[in-house]
Image 1 (tube, rainbow, N blue to C red):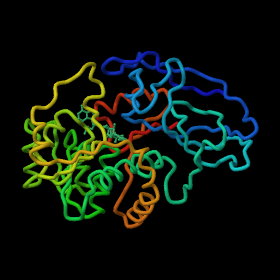
Image 2: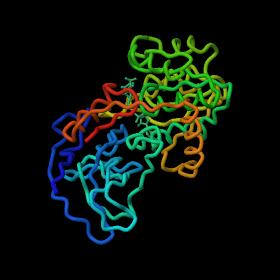
Image 3: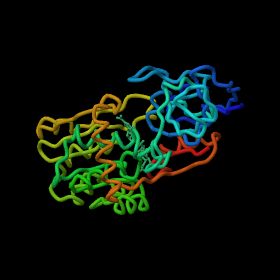
Image 4: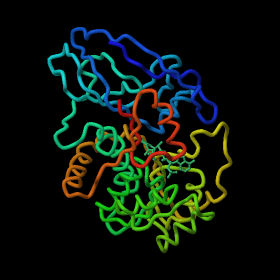
Length: 331
Ligand SMILES: NC(=O)c1ccc[n+]([C@@H]2O[C@H](COP(=O)([O-])OP(=O)(O)OC[C@H]3O[C@@H](n4cnc5c(N)ncnc54)[C@H](OP(=O)(O)O)[C@@H]3O)[C@@H](O)[C@H]2O)c1
């Protein structure tokens, strides 16, 4: 069986361009003893992948050049030489950016697709949703009746965070780029939403949207949003530092915001986190998510591009805001 796969050709300095990616092809053998052969159906597209394109180790190794890239993927077993898997089984792996692969069965997660669509295991019912959950529950410790600002509110983590915050009884201000996204944030429960692209004073706009400031800030963007959050947060406010996508393509260092003293003056609590360090919350996440979905409080939303050849453009589209909800590629 042949499988097309995307390789990284060079580590981009600044914004990645199509030249940084190349489509290759590999022969995928029959599965040996203990292995399964999987045909991917859905590929995850995530901002953290930009960090793996930098050529240096952060909390995770960089992508190797000239080899298939990696990422979340959901596929179906095509042939199996492992007693725990049968053809047709849905499985999740980190063998993304490719059409098919052979792998030992023990490294794959079998999926129950009775109540959750296979692709949503890459989004709201997977690490994306878990990220929103950890940020709200553990880092912000959000309580019913409190207020929270969710940045990149129309994105994958952001839209999960809006819905989870509402299910937890909080008041939500969302920010997103463009009127359609602002409307979407409202449609999933945000009490108010601000188009950050059409305001020249983000802090003022968010403060106006939620009189008196906010108790919590869910940081997905960084840069201008970080500076504004230090203004908008109430004394003893809490920040979940989840991501800072506005900075991921910076070629060099940027100056620090000049209002950092607010961290001291307001006694702010800032908690950075990587979702994989918080798997002890998995059971509670699955329990709450199941209950919220059953009660109609949480609805998945995906933006879907088709074909392995469109993985690079889907990835680059994250930085121009092409997605609403989770960005996925369907094969
Ligand atoms: N800590 C963790 O374990 C963890 C896990 C998953 C994700 N993350 C982080 O969480 C954040 C959201 O990830 P996601 O997967 O949900 O992606 P996403 O929000 O679905 O997609 C990225 C969104 O970011 C916004 N954006 C892009 N460039 C921007 C810029 N220069 N300024 C302002 N907004 C910009 C765009 O929305 P607009 O159109 O609204 O601008 C875009 O749709 C990212 O920072 C990611 O790195 C962290």
